[in-house]
Image 1 (cartoon, rainbow, N blue to C red):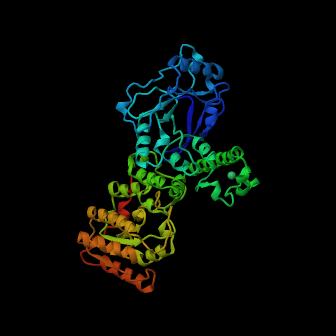
Image 2 (spheres, protein in one colour):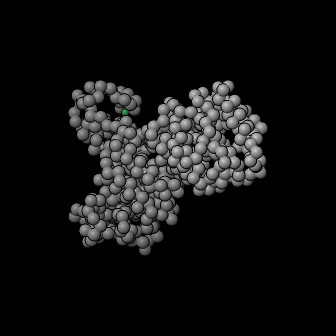
Image 3 (cartoon, helix red, strand yellow):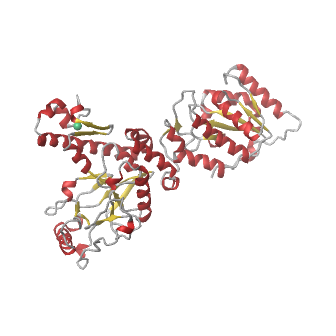
Length: 490
Ligand SMILES: [Zn+2]
């Protein structure tokens, strides 16, 4: 429990918080590395230094106490540390120096602190934790993700997590999405001094630019050709100012996306800038439990499912799982499979209105289930729930193999669990292919009521006649939907 960090809003593992220090820091935030080393007039966060080098324990201890005396409890002190690259195995890091505690005899010394965190190692209780060697994990999606998840499971949920030496405008969204609260400008500064111009869409060498794709004060006032004529030091100062602006602008956008509950959609697009970021998105979905316990069960905003990764998105997988595990269908003998509609809820769409009209008085004897990508199957009773009534997706009429396999899998699992006396499918194209696949796999018979157009007079009257003949057959038991009120997904 920390008094110095407060979380205000969440979107999945990402969160907006504030560090309650001499000046309040809104997180996710970017620390200025130059200010981190300023012991004389300390800012809100100060790094007391490393044991690497010549400093002794006593010297560093004296420094910490000096900073605390000078700055009071408004400054968070990153305690002296001895970091190793993550490639060095834990057993080889035996004799490292650790800084246990500051002089806590004086009550004014009980201010906020941060400490270095290494997987599997004992750690001090502090208000902020620094991922050891985070910068070395760039481009290693598997290892980075594992490190973040392991460390998150060790530290209290209300403490801040800092990934140093990693932030670039292109990766801030993904780092925040995975649960990182604090970043710094190290990489952006190094880039500036190497003539590398940063944007959220990737980095550019100054030499390769004809115009600046940014309208910050620096970029609006000059052009790349002019900047190239400047001395190295002047050039670097200008690029540094832009890089810093680019970080802050992206950070603001990410915080807005968190507030809007739309960070996932943004990350699905933004991660294409670099392969390791795309890998993080995909691998993150495999870590179902880490994200599932953090992703809200309900949102008010739209869920955009425009990428192939939408199929593995937590909300989608969770909905499909709950339909399989928690949902009990009404006790009806006839199943009608229908295609989804762009308009939500489906029953308000023109096509579904026509289907409903065709079913007429027999509708109450029929269980309607809608086939859709990416949700799989949506029983009619659940069409108003999240995300069934909230998603939108690009409709091209073309289904790729992954979508077909996913929806077939959902339908197959459902029909293996629940058997109907008759299954009717008013579908065409890929939907029909899915139904045929499942029918042949399970050895069940499906009656198809449409060939091409689903809303043609012929198709609709075919649907009507098929349903009518099923419902008026001699062996048909007249169980109706009305008797099944109350059976809903939990
Ligand atoms: Zn700029």
